Image (cartoon, rainbow, N blue to C red; front, side, top):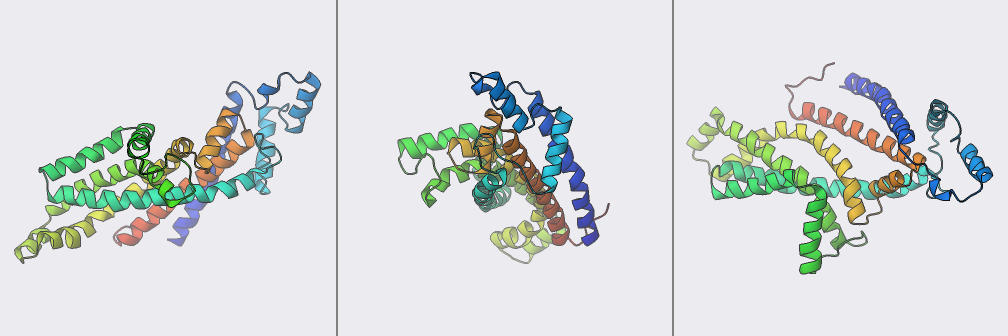
Length: 306
């Protein structure tokens, strides 16, 4: 397992380089620039700004110099927040994004897995249909629509929760539910499918023949073994939480990396976009590695090979 981990980490380096290169060159190909709003300035000043940030160099030279700086731990300074290093912005906003993602993951697992288990145990009943309705809605509806509905009902109509910000526990509920709704739906559907397959196994029929209650069979025997395939979903769920956090943080005005990323793209803040992309890429790679290791740990029959 150690050698497998080392190989995966070694492979992640060229993956991150490819991700950085694609992002870097696509940013330069996009119309507009970081200082287009300053066109009223004299050409001499604009030329000095371009020279200071090496924007007058060829793109491949800019990328090579950026790689050199990153290798020394320097993500450069933000264009949008003048004088502030990207590392400082990431260090301030990353804990908020991680906490939001962690709460959304806990919500999705705490609701989605039991929902799928109950739906499987009540197959083809109104309980099953109701549970799958919520699951399908979570997969089908986009995050911005879920966020809008939650704000409309719980913040504006009922007045139970604040519509935005991140300054008290009550303000965490709507963004956490919004971000965790789709992963919850994925877990519910996958758990239901996995449990229905387990219910056909001989040892489940044996458990029933011994007089065990339905609840004991479902939650003690069937659910435990059906969760092994569910672990494979944690990788896609981690990716969903990362990409979904961009929109959720903007809608609810959460001071996380997703909000900074969207604003940086709009303002062509090249250093901040690259810094956030590099951090998110690293998080996704490590998340998938942890899922693979966890899958092998849960099921000893699995061996991690090349």
